[in-house]
Length: 166
Image (cartoon, rainbow, N blue to C red; front, side):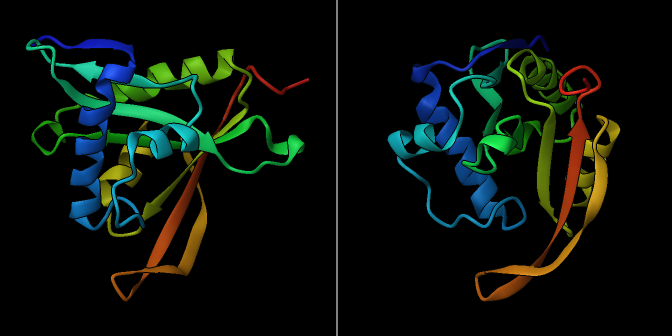
């Protein structure tokens, strides 16, 4: 099957939110329990560094985007990675295509550190990020509750080799 990597467009919003809903429903992808409106989603993520992967039927099967870690000026080059795939397309090796493109794009937009916060039971996602150059920073024990259960979160980061190295 052939796939196309392209910038996310406003027309992709409904599909992006549907894929996000699948992540919410999985119980191992996010602390979110409510799917945001397209407007709220757009306010949370940077306008730059948004990518989608389409299948040969022009259907979005995965997406990635970056969100703000802090409003403080000193952290303007640090962002959190979000990457989600339709359940039918997980585990096919497609995530690296999206993540590698976002890493390159993030550097061209001045980001020096990307971070990912992943539930400890989501071992596939932890391994995926490590395979793509992220290192484990630590485990945040019982960081927050999801559906009345405490969740441990593994924090990973990828430091740019080209941005912020002066």
